[in-house]
Image (cartoon, rainbow, N blue to C red):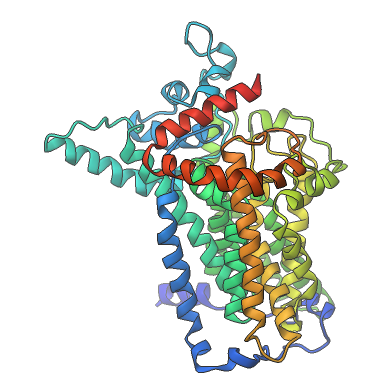
Length: 520
């Protein structure tokens, strides 16, 4: 009986402080709850009633059609991320020498001596290679790689001769497919969050727009061994679950939110800034409790917050363990700690407008997404304030980082973590534009056409970057990019796509050689 009552206590919602009044909703209206969004024109048709199931199906079909674009390759920073999965699985340790030596040429040349041995400068004082990258992607890849490992051993038992070393094609394919799947799940979580506040077709269109016209495709398909697609999944799951339980979160839900938060940190350390959302939420409730003298409710919330922090730490333990083994301390993070962070945020303007991977210059659809956060409907204003605060905190952090441009990146890759908020903002803008007209019969096709134009521009730009028609590092000339979009991309795209689908290794080798030549 005591166990049952304890379970009921854990699953019982925490008291809704100040009659569930969210302090930030005062920005929108003194009304406690807003009426449902008014749907107009075709949105009230019977077909729209089936939209909650129809649009995810369309997204899933589009995802399946995109899978041939998956590129099973470990490259650049991805060497460090993938090493945390391969070495424990194959070698049962954290010695990454084989990963460093099997890496792409540009990666190994920067870390080896003329005799082919790894330079002593690559090692920490603990005798391990300086792998400063996060372990979260490896944790998420683990189920896929375990299946691939089992298939390789089973195939070899029946006469195949596939190297069970983590470098052969089955392992790389499993890794790349896992990355694509996690990226798609992150898009689904983002769509689900947006469709609670706008009509489904706008949430669907916003998801397609950010999916196709941002930096995400590069790291979801072309460079799958990097962590950014995993960040979309982890942040999308965090925001979706945080919003879903925000009205009355139980102790168990606080603990689960903490576990999700810990995973989000494991995947990408910068994602920790999104913890500002439950922090602000709790501070608002503490303020309400203080004003109404509901100290017992404040005590319950404090206990829930404590359990949340314990859950975050518990899920962050894999990162802490690897930091201790490799660097000799739980809170040592390699060069991230030693770079010249400038907390006056001097790079904020460059991040947005620079020709060197500027967020808005390289991926202009994000300007619409950011602008859309201004046009939140009444029932979404409190949530939009929270999400805007999270995005602003992330922007501030990257503005302080001296390598804000991401070195060899398409667009500003750091902000791929903010994808769910960009989808939400673009959905709000589309909803506002749709509300200006009595029927969406013509508005939706027009908006869809604009999204297609952004996506086509992004695809051509991405092709130029991937084929090294433009520098992958440093500033670019947008006059040259525009010229290439019109005259060069249409001419070379078909031949390069044939190489990508049928002679991919040859194409990757050519791209690698171009990259090395550009660095000289």
